Length: 140
Length: 423
Image (cartoon, rainbow over all chains, first blue to last red; front, side, top):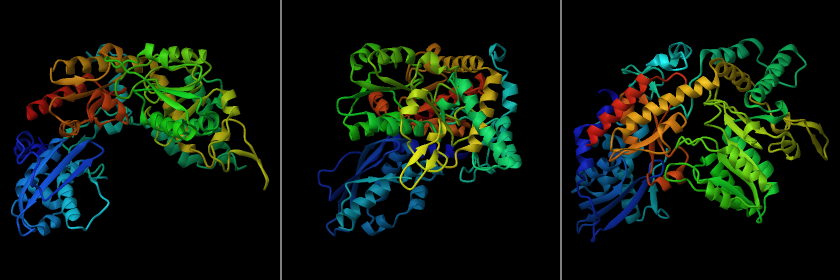
């Protein structure tokens, strides 16, 4: 299979079928929810910080949606542990595609970056850099 | 098997060079992808159809030979363009059984035709004592439009239920329609369920109560013979780009006396007869509703598209698509984990919306694309209907004159691949 089939390499399917860190945290430092209105993907990210208030101790996610959005959230939850909030906020789209390890077609990039966007907006809300933002929505 | 089909599909395909292209490369570079590997299987015709050379040639000929604005110039080019543009209205009238060009308004698309009536008629005629009857399978073009007009006028907006088979519950329709029903807007063919609605029966019901009927023909006119007199629609709308024509043109049919009584929707040039600083008089139908420089090229090209389809025969177009839909339905229902929405295969228009258990429609569509198969994935602008079906999205394969059984085999093969990948 050529082209975008690579999107469904074993790693993606594995994370989709067996999501890591799935669920909600009782002791989250902050939580945030986002959606991809055009296809109904939803992601909630719960982040617990270390005592330093800067280092990510644990990330859980929950939600519903396509394989790309859910696998991306699952991988991100693993990737973020031990990282700082600054490192989270520095993540860009290339970092996400590199993490997924596959080519994501332009039509599907919104699915891929939803979890990162939710985590970043959650961190910004926590740090008071954003307000009046209840839900993250990825738009074209 | 192909021999039993009413259309000579090989000959039809010759008219559509785009069907020869391959897909699978870098979609950020339209038409120039080096990685293209798979023959295109285009099954997204309910979104837009392709355009045959005969129509493309008509557009080129217009720009090469007589490009000009209409109704203004006294020079020869303008007269040629005006004549062709006016004849396009006549041709559309003939095609759908209207009484003449007075009943045929060119718009941008079906949605604009819906909005034209909602604003020009609905906003002026509706009040809190009235109700507007829609169906649960309505496209957003009519659903959102009347919903918003309802909010502005206070008119109650009601929805005829869709039953488990994906058909309209006509008992419910008889409950909903009453003497306060001012307008019923019903989709002729559902773009999600493939259901062909009993619009003539609905029109009778609504007319008995003194209301008007607007039929959304976006998914019927391109695919089957349609006669607005037989249906007795008061208004009827469809789009050019779903029937071998260009984008940017839609048609609003309206009974002449209704269009006469309605105020214009857009004001400006072209639609006026006499203007003073104090007041204005409107041009005759249909020009009263075509303000500004109209869709000249698109109108002339729509004429060519109608000629093309009628050469094939709308009965043949319909029969061909029904055979394909029935085949696709039968092949896909063979899988227990594939859910198909709408009525059975011998009782639906040429489209099949479905889901595979455990595979999001967008993932499914991506995998089909890897096989070269283009389908639509999403809610197809029927979000409330998808809510009712309990799914966020579905994949939809929709067929047209150039599709073959072999292409449906490729669709089914690709669906099977997705099933296995996600199993």
